[in-house]
Image: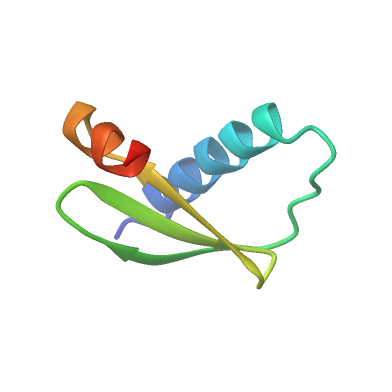
Length: 63
């Protein structure tokens, strides 16, 4: 993966998390995996956040 694209993805992930969890300080982001409908990221070596790729992925996460 192109490092500039990877950095842009991580910045987007950081922005989404901090906009919903204002008191969370993010020091580390690592992509854990990617499936058909979502991508998972490890935050600060302890929390996992899943982000949907599309509407179907959002419905799946909501379940």
